[in-house]
Length: 177
Image (tube, rainbow, N blue to C red; front, side):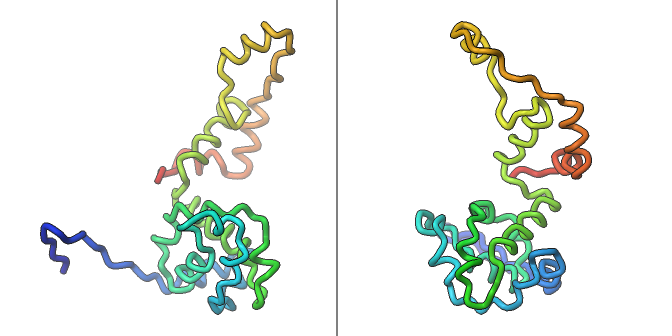
């Protein structure tokens, strides 16, 4: 039972899902999660971690190992990996850290945990064929400068490709943390 006073913070207990680790390891690229012994080489080698107080690959992998599903998949830091593979290259246990993080991001997407910026980019691609919407003012300025118009996308083909990979379903069913 949680008690709350004027000075206290409402703290919720973590939910542990013992099957989460096995779910991650069943996915292609997640198999090596089990051999991580938390040495910290991934975090100390990571260029992103050098500039972030919150991004710690070791912590993310440990949460997955412990079955802390909800907190792992909803963590905004999960999306900070640049996939440079430095962590994977330097891991003394051969843990494919970057691949495990990719698996975790894919699981997050399946559960609708997609950062707003990625949802917006996907929505833009569906609607325009470009990652960013091109303002009419930019098109006008290009014309004034004598530049050719930007190429038009074939939205039907873009839509088919997005449908083929299941993107439309994911975009419609997403939640934006």
